[in-house]
Structures are given as structure tokens and as C-alpha cells.
Image 1 (cartoon, rainbow, N blue to C red):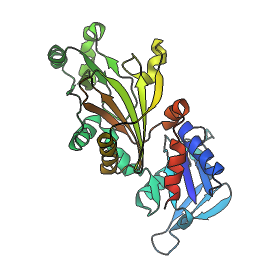
Image 2 (cartoon, one colour; image 1 turned 90 degrees about the vertical axis):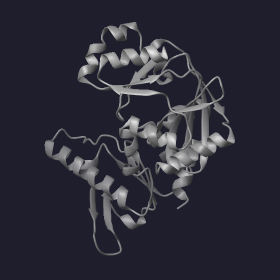
Image 3 (cartoon, rainbow, N blue to C red; image 1 turned 30 degrees about the vertical axis):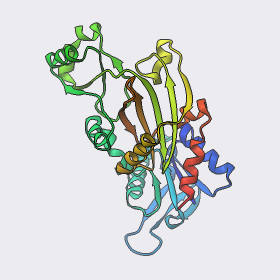
Image 4 (cartoon, rainbow, N blue to C red; image 1 turned 180 degrees about the horizontal axis):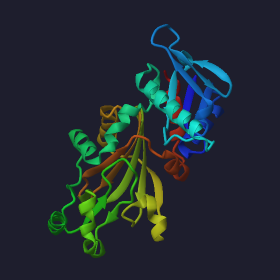
Length: 299
């Protein structure tokens, strides 16, 4: 049996659940909206390993052969503090189980931790042979000015796993640069070229070419810029490197952000361990959700 953990209205999870339903695969959805109504009991000894009670059904954990987890911030439908506390307790216990179970997990919480620090993850990316942008992490305004003078065009983004909009640094940003003294920020040399998002699902590769004039195509609509996406076949060595990178990070599913420079060299910006693949799937028709379910089934 496959378990899906997250919010049912979260598009990637919803698409994967639909794919499991269409393939008539036995599954259970553990709804994060209603964690205060679920129970999880784990056992240190014994063969069963404990059980999960959800939707009034008692399910031995040993029956769960695979899990697709998108563990977003836990919540509870009730505003009652006790219900919220119960939801948080379930979430912590379940994510701990995801890290320890012998079942296949896409992805284990501990494998997602590299994305909590983008500079750290960049070092891991570089070890696989991808180029990474020249990077400065600082809260000293003069260091940013020197970095900009060196590279001409630079962008800035957050350091953590919290999603932020990548912006090109301009003169207006320089006028308010003193603000970074209270918040270290990541600056990178601007990399020209064409964006390619690669999703790896186990050993399979699904690539999307993105044509957009915006610095961050994810938010191009906010700036009134169009985005065009199409299926793309990267060179075999690049595809293989993406698979190796995902495996090195312990990720069975990953969203890898690449850019093909005009000189033909590939730059990797980051690896998303919980990618919103539904956005790319809906625009290109790539069967990513089906591949995720197939991977979960192959246990």
C-alpha cells in the first residue's frame, strides 16, 4: 500500500493521488488538514512496527510499502489549541517514522535538509561537476559593492529553504543596501542563458526548457512577462549527472534548476527536494506524477 502525506489540495500531491487512483493502486491519504483526528503508534519491539489510525481505519505500518511525502507546515481544522498541539505531535512522530522506516520514502525528511542552506547545497552540487555561480554571503554593504563591481550584473536571494523571489540587483537596491546589516543575504553573479528545469524520478529524467525574460520565471506574471515551456532532451552526460546529483543528496525525486550558458556550459543553481512538478507537468504534459507513482509501486 502507498501512503500519501500532505495536503490533498496541494497540486503535486493531488496529481500523484489521482495517478494512483487511475492505476487502481491501493493507497491511503494522510490529510495534514486533519492530523488532530489521526493516531500514530510505533513499537520498539515486535514485528508489526506499530499502526496508523486514519479515517476510522486501523492500518498496520508494516502494510505501508512506500510513501510520497510533502510535509508542509502542520495545521488543524480546529482553532482549539489542544487540536493544534495534537496535529503538531502527529506530524513530528510521522516525519520521524519516515526517516526510520524500511519502506521507500519520496523523500525522507533528512534527505531534504541540504536545501536548508543554499550555500552548503551549492558545495555539494559542485562536487558532481556542475558549475555553480560565484556567490557572496554577507551583511556588509561594501562587500556587495565590490562584488557588483567585479561581476557587473548580480542577483540576490534568500539563504534558507524558504522560497524567495530571485531579483537582479539594481541601483535602487544599492540605495537601500544598509538594510542587509540586519539580515545576511546571498548574492550571485548573473548567469546568462536558457533555463532548464530537470525533474529526476529515481533514474528517470524529465526536462523542461523555459523561455522567459524575467530573472525568476516562477514569478514572471507579476512583472507582466510571458513564460513559454517545452519538453527538452538534455545531453546524455547532463542527464546522467542530474541523476547522480539526486542520488548523492539521497533524493528519489528532485527538481534541479539548470541554465545553459551561451558558451554551451551548464550551471546548476539549486536542487529542490520537494518540487512543485505539477506546474511543469500541466504546461508540457510530461508524465511526472505517473512516474512518481510507478517509483512508489516498484518496491
